[in-house]
Amino acid sequence: MKRERLILLTGMLLMAFSVAMGAFGAHAWKVKLAETGRTDTYELGIRYLMFHALALILLGLLIERFPRLFLAVVFLVLGILFFSGSLMVLALANEGRWGAVAPVGGTLLILGWLTAAWTVYRSGKADH
Image (cartoon, rainbow, N blue to C red; front, side, top):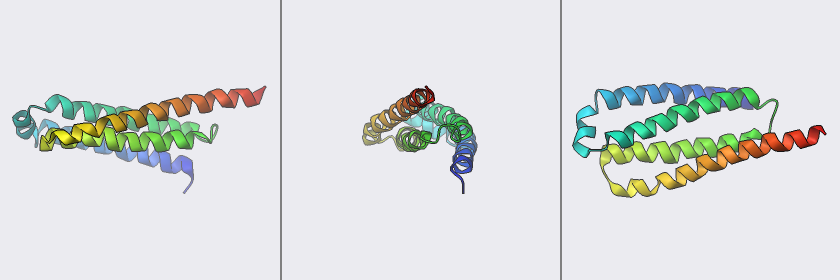
């Protein structure tokens, strides 16, 4: 499968997952999240998941023009898993140790965006 297609599918599937997890949080797990007092934590995880899934779709559209964006995609996917995943588990399980995983995910998301910016910046250098 071409990288472009793989990234687009990943972004689209993560978007579907974010909507499903948001619905579970608003309905099926509403009482559980209220009990843990971590509804805001859960919603933050979903919000970052959704925004970054959209970003993957955008990067999937740009990867043909900027092939080195793939490393940024890898950082973003790992960042989504660590950041959003840990926040959702933290909110549902109410186990504080999961909070220690979120900064790793946040760092990976930052690395992803910096890598994307560097890739686009460097591609302009080659044009001159």
